[in-house]
Length: 199
Image (tube, rainbow, N blue to C red):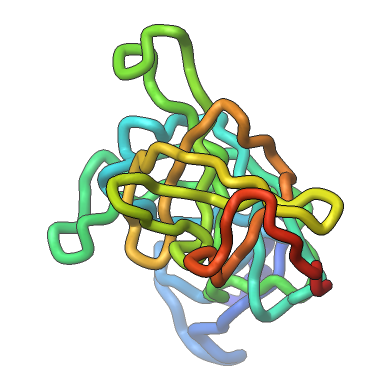
């Protein structure tokens, strides 16, 4: 019997599984439809940070496929299991109104600003910052980060919250979101050293 198929929502056909003239039965898959008004992005976070992840946490998204694009979204769900091989937990992020060039299956990176739990920090939730491992310096038994203002560095001793390989989560009450820091070469710096900022 000839019939017309209508989607229940707007979207883009990513893949067709049948061709014109094919016979199909009820519940057969005929196409893969990707919603055009929103996308679900799945991110993997180290298990050490699992207790700090919760729905509603804001996420900044980037992808190498669209180097000029930056998206803002929130965590909408947490997969209640951890991958035993990678020791990472998956979270779902809902991105509304994605750009036209962001396609299903592309690799996406997410940046989170975490909050530590109240039991660990009785004075209240403290924001943790995730930075490149190259930006943190180990000196004796201290972890140091160098902030930059007016071409001069300031040495700040930080607490390492979590080690994620090429990235680390750190905390200190002097750190602020958007603050400029030295990304590489902290081993050769000292507090008050003059530097040249390269953009």
